[in-house]
Image 1: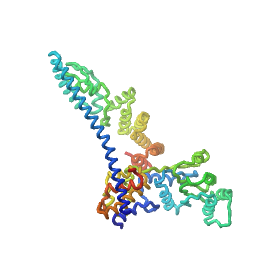
Image 2: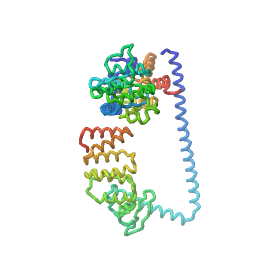
Image 3: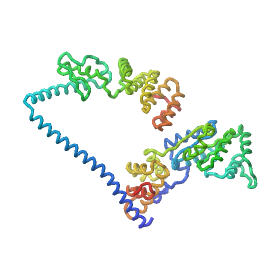
Image 4: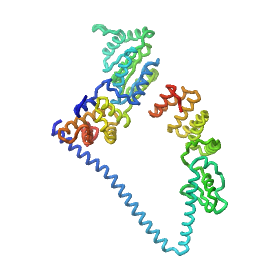
Length: 244
Length: 268
């Protein structure tokens, strides 16, 4: 390379950098404009509401303050129910009424939970269990078979992928490999792109002594996806290493 | 031990050297499947992939690793004329070059292949098979039916769909292995390992994630393009170092971007 070639290339490089900066600038400016417009609109809106509210009579104002009191109570109930119900077993247990011994029920649209106001705090957890909330189902080391039964019953209605996967993991953890194979298959039927269903299915097969069919299944999936995790499992099964 | 950018760029010269083979997860798996495919009883194995994905290197590696265990022959340069191909066949079957004035017709090869099927299992590795005319591919198909000879065809893709996709040809394909361009992580490993193998530890460690991302973005994960880009970038760094614009082992982003422009991977 000589100097003139280098300088020519450098010129091209400078225009490349310039066009790159411009390309970044346009979406950045667009975003700023959009956010600015949204902020301006929301400011306008709040001014409008304030002017409407200020025209209302005293009755309206007292209603608003009464609402804010009940909101405080319901948020306390919400916090309590969240603290009581982090796991499936806790949710699944409570099937009692949404309305408690004292006070009335109010639906919190944000969380979808029914909150009891002024009633027994322990009923808040049961109220939360009325609706099957979509949460992350962790396999808890609990010997409670009611859990699986609850989730199975729910699955019959919802055919929810997370439920099927939960059951597959649940049974696998309890060495019930026929059930874990079945539920992994169910989950896979709903969502065949989920890698974990393939893994659970194959591992259950291996545990049941069906190593060859486990290998066939995994190889077919690996051919489609090239997943390294699958590759490692395939190697492990082929070498006869223990599967956890 | 190499020194400076001028030495380092030699790492990325695009040549077939089996000793420089970098075993990535994907290529290791493909290699294992190739080896297994050769052991199976069916007649044709296909190795597919775009240019620059490592097919030729893999064939050479297979040849070097297995030629003492199996009767393996490598046709690295396409023999597109029938006469050249038949000469090669003669050499494969007899172990001797065909005499210049001798001519052997194809039926004789087929007959011979049938006669030796109990004694010999010949594997012929054919690189750049997409260059062969349809009639020679058909001859390979007929020979593979004889039972003593198997063909491993490396080609860019199934261009010859009118021939290879035909049922009578496809049923003889025991294994199809496809090589693809590398993922970002694989390409980063490839570059890193190539530099480490030549003792260029400092340079290997200096390539940032942002630079690796750039390399992958503009080469699409293609090994040949990656070699080309890095060779050009290091050549530029060598020049820039003389102008005091950079210092070994730092590769400025400017050098990579200029290399991408020079090689045509990016349009200014």
